[in-house]
Length: 245
Image (cartoon, rainbow, N blue to C red; front, side, top):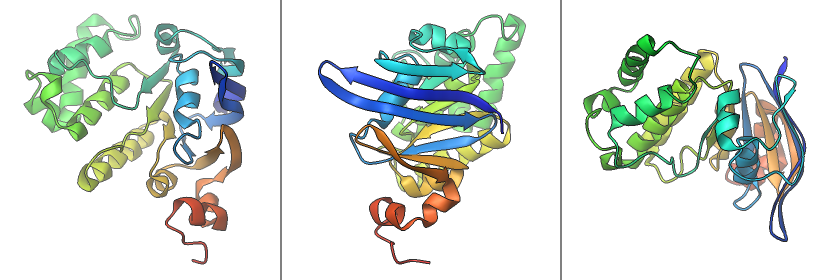
């Protein structure tokens, strides 16, 4: 599979603290790749550095073979690296529809302006709760509904790679299942996804390849099914099932 996104020896540093120490990973076009590991391992820092939200201290990020290392977030977005950050970062005082309109206008030139309203309607049809509340302030939505809005906004930005950071965090189990159904749905429709997720079990179920990050370094990587069966991964991240078959 062709590598759409290639990360080579990525390093991220906050002052004197090294958060990411030489991470290398590859995301094939049309695939879902998961990045799992304990809290504080550097997962979000890796994702945010790829998407231009935090500075890169070293290494390279290539999108379709083109250097995009260290681009500011607006230029990374224009290149097609679209981040749904932890915490969602919706525009709480604006309506649901206004949030969607901002997103569809974020990559001007990709879609004719005459198509903008239709694209917003498509997202409201995909997520009926957004259609029902499109005139309401986004801040009035529940946490799960805000996550759906954040993902909908990202899809309207026409990502080459969708960078999802902890989409299930803080959500009720029913909504967690819905979020992962959406991830599977957009994957079937051809969207490439790099997923950072604390729920390792679900992350491995929806992805084709996965990396385990600990203390800023990749310690295990491989096909997701193989990692789900790996005794080290099962013991550390899948409920201590090291002896399961």
